[in-house]
Image (spheres, one colour):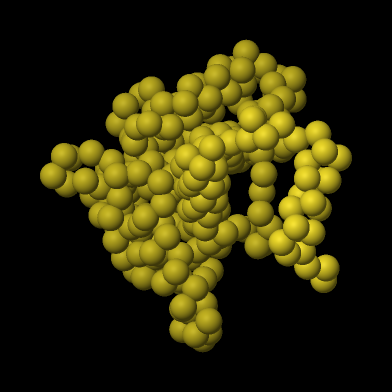
Length: 258
């Protein structure tokens, strides 16, 4: 590597300044440089926080999903006005969740776009700097069942549980499928019951009696069916009572990739 010192180094620097046409009177101050480096460091930390939780997500088939509000195609639904209204409601709720914490439910039949809009909300909130993770409850149940024969899964479950308690925005997808289909509903595995209850406790500020973080659930079941699977107290804690926080996909047909 070529080294410069003394007069030679100064001459080389002057040549570079002349060649690059650098205006020495327009260089950033030390304060500007320090502020720039600080902003870069803070942005990097914010990015790491947002994506740290996303990387712990639990996907069905271990296949990550992506969807944005721009991908919401209302023409794929026969009831396009209803699809448009649901898309707008999800977008408005996502905007509110940037600065406020509350729970949201997307309820309806299979294939009507619940997961798509939940993913769009997650994408929007991550872009806004909120950490988020996606959890397929059916896949989570599989892991709970397998943890007794695989120590690696047990360790991963501990990491997942910790992240679910601390993440800003938690998506519980297909919530209720772990309790069986309609007409054959049963109580959920005790270990999963305990895990979910601990997570829900951690996501409530009991002193202020309000949500700590946002939980967004997609489900094919109504609240009474969910209470047949889980303790009523847990369902009352995660299922929003405010009608404005409920996206009901009634009168919508099953159309994948809406």
